[in-house]
Structure formats: structure tokens, C-alpha cells
Length: 220
Image (cartoon, rainbow, N blue to C red; front, side, top):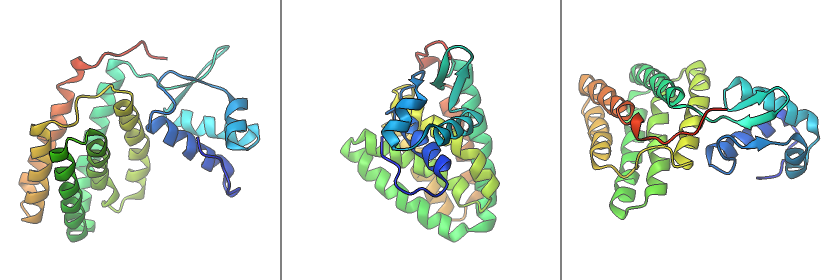
């Protein structure tokens, strides 16, 4: 866990640091958190940690149980299904908005990401591929130009990456999924936007069909 050095907006920095630790799997799903320990680790007082806890709880990344404490979220199978459903809605809306806001820039970014994904796929580098997969999907929201959409998507993205880093998602190096990424970028470059939307819808729906592969613990 990295220490906090910049004292500006301290609670936001603490929330960001904790969010990154949840996202990257350093804080495990269902893990109990201690205000005192985190304050010590980050070199801050308990007040910004408490405020950060409230912020992350609002985002659904932390859960507080009376008389028990504060825990990293631990989703049920139904929770994960809902996460994927919301993700699909947000990314498809992001795609629609990106076509209007930054079509050319978005197309260049997609192709760049897919080139890196192709290299990682061929090299069998699953960790790198997983990070690029998230960049690919996040780009549909980031290039939309809609800050509210991005702010709603961010905690969903963090949850998805946390699930992946806790080994709760399907194998990333999937040939069909990889092929869909490349086709989406290629069709976007050719301005075949109807095909892009169709492929993106199919691509997102595939993940909802594998939820029974997850081995989930009881939710917090």
C-alpha cells in the first residue's frame, strides 16, 4: 500500500489508494479493514480514512456491518450478474456517445489497444492481456465525453478488475473474445457502426452466459 504524500484532498487520496488496492487484489474480497492500520500504513490520521471508507461504501466497494466492522465487498453470483448488466448498459451508451464526441480519436485508441492485446495474446501474457482488456472496455466510456457516465462507470470498473484479480472471472486468453475485440476495432475504423454495436452487444452478452462458472463465497 503506497503512502500518502500530497496532503491536498486527503480523504480522496486515501479513497483512491484503497480503491487501487481493492482493484489490484492487494485487499482481498471480504477482507476486514482496520482504520488504525490503514492510517498507519498511509501515514495519515483516522479522519481521512473514515471519510474514505464512507466514500467507498457509497460506491459499493466496502460494506460496513454493525458490531462487526468494515469489509471489502464480497459479491454473490446475483451481484456479479447485476454488475455485468450495468456494465453492458454503460459501455453501450458510452459507445453511442463516443461516436458523436470523438469518433476519430476513439478509433485510433481502439486500434492501439488492440495491437497491444494481440501481442499479449500471442505471447500468452494473461496478466497484461487482462489489463488491456479493461482498457479496451473503459475506452468506450472515457471517450464519450460524458463525465457523469464516467463517474458512474468507475466503481463498476474497479469491481470488475477486483473480481479478475481475485481469480473470479473466466480465463482472459479466450480466442473468441480476442477475435471480437479485433473485429470491433476493425469495424470502427471502417465506420461500420451498426456492426460495431452488434458485435459489442454480443461480446458483452457472452460474459453473462458464463456466470455459473464462478465459485463464489457467501456475500458480506
